[in-house]
Every structure is written in C-alpha cells, then in structure tokens.
Length: 269
Image (tube, rainbow, N blue to C red; front, top):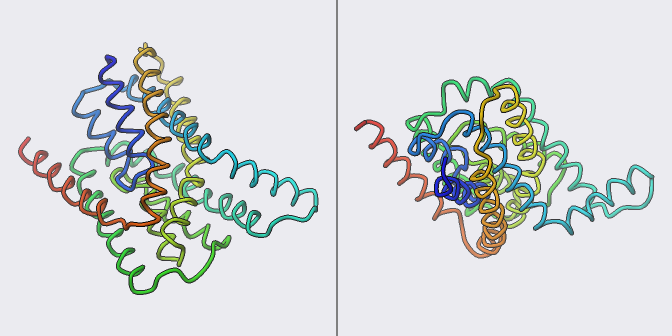
C-alpha cells in the first residue's frame, strides 16, 4: 500500500465514521477497488479506528471529564448532577448490545457480507430507515430527555451497524430521534457512544493482526491515521452544527444514489 492509498483510506474513514453513511461499507468498497491485502487491510482498520476514536475523545474531552467525575462521585456516594449520571448510565448500558452481538455475529459478517453487492443493499435499507425516522420526527418532534432505558434502546439500534452499509452513527441518531430526542442530542449521544465501540473494534482488529502475522507497511498506514484523525475532528464539529439546523435528508439521498451505483457496477462486473 502506498502513501496515496493510505491518504484515501484515511479520508474515507475520517469523513464517514461520524456521518450517517457507513464507514465500514465505504472502506469495504474502497479496499475492494484498491485491492489491498488482508494483512495491510487489518492494520489499516485497526489504526484508523484508533485515530478516529482519539479525534472524538479530543473533541469531547471536557464532556468526558464531567462524566468521569460524575461516575466517581456517584461511586463515592457524593452529590451528582442527575443529568450527567444518567448520561453515564445510558452510555454504559448502550454499549452492551453491540458488544454482545458483535462477538457472535462478527465472523458471519466478515465471511459472507463484506461484498460490494451486500453493502449496496444495506446502504439502501439504511436510507429507508433514516427516512422513516425523519418522517416520524416530523409528525411527533422532541418529547423527552435521555434516560438509561433510551440508552439501551439506542444501543440496540447501534448493533445494526454490525452489517456493512448500515451506518453506526446513522442508526443511533435515527434511533434517538424515534425515541423523542432532538437531532442534536441524538448526534451528541451517538458520538459519545462511539468511543467504547471504536476503541473495542480497533483492539479486536489489532489482536486479529497479531494472530495473522505477516509483513505490514506501517509508514503509509500511520500517514493515513493522521489524515483520518484530523478529518474526523473537523467532521464531528461540522456535523453537530449541521444537525442543529438541518435534517438527515442529504444523507438519505446519498445512500440511495450510492447503493444504486454500486449495485449497477457489481452486476456489470
């Protein structure tokens, strides 16, 4: 893998990880196009996931300090802000479904579903799901705050992203909207919920890489990681501002058009 390929993969990961357009699906498509080897592919996945996790931690570092303080104060039986400790509970509980389902389903997904045609199909289904969330949101907008129960349900929506083409951020944002959260609050919770999952994915792929062995070209991969981290930081800021004013419709149309193009090319080849 050369520097240009690494930069392309870093840009793809940085842009798509936190936008509702499926980073996994895009990486499958781009790696398929560039024909990157399995060993380098695993290394890229692991390092890029760590890079985007560092970006979102850097962006929300103040929030994370507040939430960590709330957790330790609660454990120490000291007074806490109920909204902060509820967020902590929601994040912990919301992480569990994707972890448990990922352990059992990951081998099936990587063996059978990481193909361009499957990605196209799930991109289309994800777009329909986001469309449904926007429709319900229009009929019945914000009607409640985040709770631990909603955190669990959003975590179940997050598990849908185990399938390549189903965006993790899109699933959790749409899930939050269906549960009565605002688009902005759904997006903020989605990004915080991404931290343990993306760290876990990076660690899992790192272990897979160690088991597989082989020679890895680390230079370009580290360049890609820097590109992914910087890009992800900018995208998080942009998307949160975007969701204060606008809807998921641009991403819905993007998913529908891309799924059609990928399906068309897959059938031709």
